[in-house]
Every structure is written in C-alpha cells, then in structure tokens.
Figure 1: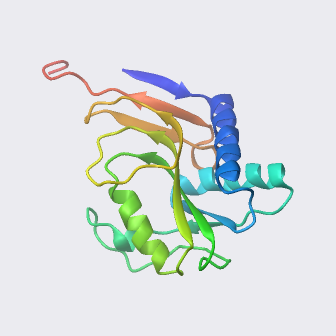
Figure 2: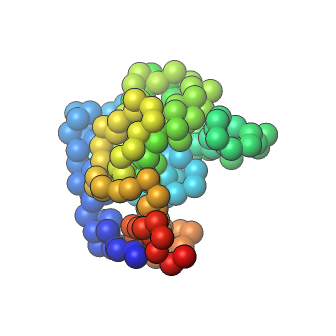
Length: 179
C-alpha cells in the first residue's frame, strides 16, 4: 500500500516554510551556504537556496556533496562528484538531504563536508524525518515528520530525476500477507 504524503504544491510550500525558518534562525543569509547530499538532497538544496535568495535578495550559494567514499554501509568509491564552488570555512553550512532515517547518511555527509573546510556551524535540513535513528543525529529543520515502520519506504521523487515532485510512503506488507 502506498500513500502520497506531499505532492508538488505541498513540497513547494514546505520548502518555502523551511527557507523562512533557516533565515530566521540565522538572522538572514549573510554567512549562510547550502550543501546538498548527492542524489536527491542536491535538488532539494538548490530549491531551498533559491527560495532563501528570493526572500533575502542576496545570493545564497549552493553546492553538492558526494558522500560515497564515506559510507560505512556501502562499497567505497574513488570518484568524488562534489561541487562546492565557495568557501566552507567560517560559514554556517546548511546540510540538506531528502530523508533522515538511521542518521548514517548524515554522519557520512559530515565527514565528507569536513574534507572541504571547517564550517562555523553545520545545520541539518531534511524534507522528511521518518524516525528510527541509530545515531544521535537530529535535523534542525524538518519539512515533515512521518511515523513509519522499519520495513516501510519513503520515496522522494524530484522533477530533475523523476519527472515529477512527490513524496510517497510505501508501507511494507504485514508478515504473512501475499505469501
């Protein structure tokens, strides 16, 4: 069974709210930069940075971060597709991913980010928090908290990769069903 949690309009409104929250917490965008985790965190980060730029009237830089070499649950990769064309050191970094689950992706992202400089602070923004943390990592900014079971899946579709914007909860089949 699946259920649409956010459609395109919901995503747009949610990211707009998050942009305002981030700017308010940082007293504007003066020393703020945004870095999205490759793959779907990157388009979400671009949208947040664009929204904040529109609100502030000042460009909020945005980059993308490849964490594949820092994962502890997948084979390591020698390639680095990160593109961070601005200074990290001394800036407040808003690290963006589409979903937070166990916290392992964000742990890897923080390790990868430190290879690019020493930020004044790192704040975490996620579109969906589905719980079930294995590491003590919590988002500073969250679009929506969703109660899930461990076997469920949250699928974030972004126009850039999937041709549509949507967040879908795919519930796991109860044990014994469909067997």
